[in-house]
Image (cartoon, rainbow, N blue to C red; front, side, top):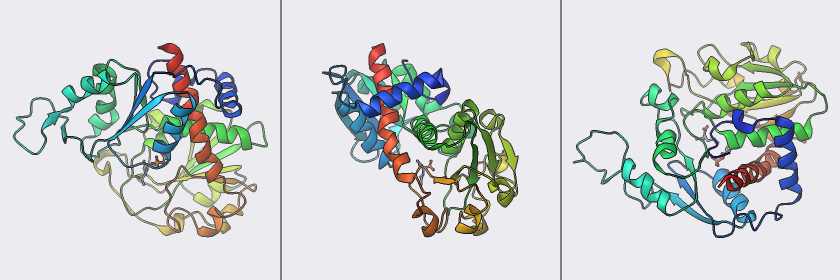
Length: 317
Ligand code: AN0
Ligand code: CP
């Protein structure tokens, strides 16, 4: 594996889960693999889990790690070609990318959807420029349309906790005051389409996701109905995708907040969320603190997913 941008690249899932399990049980077995190799982690957006878990994964593999917050200390970067650069941005991404490539062996990039131009977002303009111009293997630490390291961690977590061969997994929209990207729900949907499960997505009208990601999911607009008999509830907010409403918050309907009444409709489902989560908007205190909440082991598996992927990339160098 050279670049990693989507869980579709995991290949045979049984093998991918076996590799993840090996990494989880033997975190320091491959320290030689990363010796004298440098990972550059580049953040255009904030992060807690991705930053810490990916650095930890790289250190477990014996790598050196450089972290750069582009918006704190680096030059402001112009991203449009053809611009007369007489404004507040002293450097162009098209020089910055190959320069950064000179200082490392692998690059991880976090670059969220900007909601300025849907085509730029959905063509993964920034991530693809890194792939094209850095000369290095690149992996996504959440790009405009996908968050594959999160999704792989989610898949590993479901594999660990599932009690049935074919669990019912429900991804539910929940309210949030700010516009959030579709990367996590797109990517989760992509992952669930690869797993053996009954996959249902529930959201209010207007929050339909790109069908290229939702695939074979059943869309159910009645949240209570969707929750019936579920084994896993995966909550997430996202801004509208369709048409003129792209990137907009259409409502903050707190009747969609995941609470104990709704969880009681499930088959004692586990509660999942990628975090960070706004309590009592997305989920009540009671649900996230309940024994069925597996958000912490889910976050812990971010080290496992990152280490499994970085290891594959190191093996391909
Ligand atoms: C981001 C999002 O929804 O994509 C990151 C989640 C991992 N969340 C926020 O910005 C709050
Ligand atoms: N889940 C996740 O990616 O969290 P951060 O945004 O804190 O990295």
